[in-house]
Amino acid sequence: MAIIHRTTLEPTKLELLTDWLPSRPWYRGGPDAPVLTKSGGFRLEDPEGEVGIEFMVATDTSTPEPTAYLVPLTYRAAPLAGAGHALVGTTEHGVLGRRWVYDGCHDPVLVSGLLALIEGRAPAHAQSIDGALDPEVVRSYTGAPLIPDGRTPEPADDHAGTRIPAPHGTVLHIHRVPSPVPENPPLRPEGAIGHVARGWQDPQGTPLTAVLVSLHTS
View 1 (cartoon, one colour):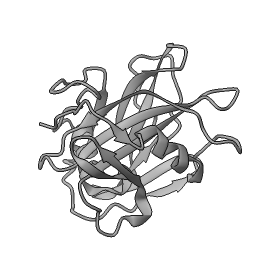
View 2: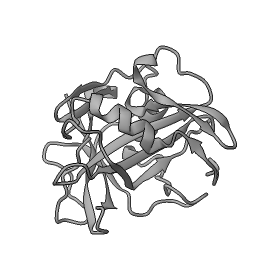
View 3: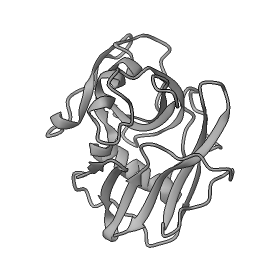
């Protein structure tokens, strides 16, 4: 089980994202740097206990209409081979030392964990509470077993979000800019064979909920 350390990060996750987000094709902000707040999310457990996995919802309040972004991140004690292009940045952890922070869509450990969550083989964990599961995460799946094939993820980013090829000709859609819906929990998107949904709060504390990830046949 991963341990959540109550300590410092220099720079913080949000500081790293402030520099990184504007470089993404799905970023909706203006010319000024984003002003970010952490609005919600959940964690997954690495079975090997080596990689931290977090799905963070960060809200940019620099524009008239705040925009929430879904940012899957992984935290490693050493660089991930061949993934320099996916590095968000490095940070100094008060207990663990230097950590390499990656866009998790490029990290095979996160993608395997996400498939396990969608299929129901692994639970979601609370973002900030040691050992606690997150009952607010909703998932579904109808299809063949999603056995990871061991390949390195090859995600593609565009204005709509990120798509990651997955086993059996499926494709993970990472909804980088989640669209809140009135249903709670949200319904599985039309045409999807699986999904993950969860709520978060806007800067005024209003609860919002949306599909964060969907799985489709290619």
